[in-house]
Image 1: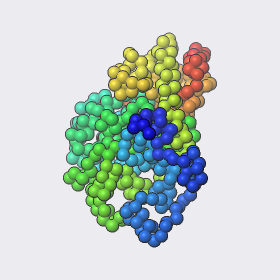
Image 2: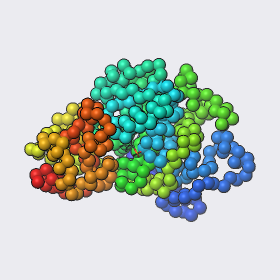
Image 3: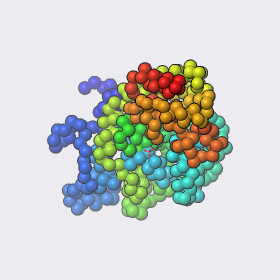
Length: 426
Ligand SMILES: *Cc1c(COP(=O)(O)O)cnc(C)c1O
């Protein structure tokens, strides 16, 4: 055996998977079962008391999901991961371990529209208060820190405009404040950016997007970097204090550098219940095998389309960090040298009406609310994903009325450009 550490593409195909020990099946089987038989009473008791690792019930863990968890943890460079039913479920489970009612977390204002909704409304009803900061103004994060701040949440490549966040700068703020940095890495995928290498303590994903990659399965995942000390100052009681339901064990003390992933599983997933179906885990695992190939094609196509749009007379501006003229190009070169992602926006000289007309004339692009599909997608955020925001907030989050968002697929780029050309010219 060579002592070389496997590269990213090898991990994407192999990490976490072995031939099935009973059947020899090479693809990871779908363990479509709710429950698992115990060896005997002692074994059952030790599993329930967290004294042994093993399968109990699919809400808490499943062998197909375990392969997915190990694979994404390897790709992100984390210590452990937990798969859940959706990206939104991942966000709820993460913050449930960190915040008590009345606590605060700081979030970048440029976020997926659904996250802005979730943070503003649903989390408020849990007593978790979001404080917004501007990812283009690092000091706005520093100014937002209070004694009740428990976490900072950002996107590596931010929806909808594809802007690049200075993860290292914000991680410095988080360190100084003594709180973990959570990075939503959905739009980059670990192929483009590995936030843990830049100081993230927790990474979350909507697996629904580039990791699954085919627009057919919802999923979410939480990756524990193993970098945060949860024991300090009683700030994170879910991790540092004795757990009554597990005979008084302290998760940080017992599980060390993967205690956060354990807390998400044995407190979050167990009690809130957003389990990922093993069938979806299988679909997403299959998608991940081709992540490096797809992601490179997504980025190369996106750059070609952005260049075409930037030169078109009907286009007012293109917001794609992969263009040398873009405001975020410097950050893109630093954080995402292989490509600046495949989700970006542009605005039309004809404003709102021109945007709506373009969307209706496109034929190869599908008009729908998703990103990270093999297929190219288009949407008008101001009237859909970001419609709940007032006009000023729409502009601040990069979803002004004249803005159209594209998610570029893996088709032939010439066909994508031809479709845009006919729709813009017609
Ligand atoms: C889609 C998305 C989410 C939410 O994920 P779901 O799987 O739809 O729940 C969160 N963050 C980003 C950046 C997304 O694109």
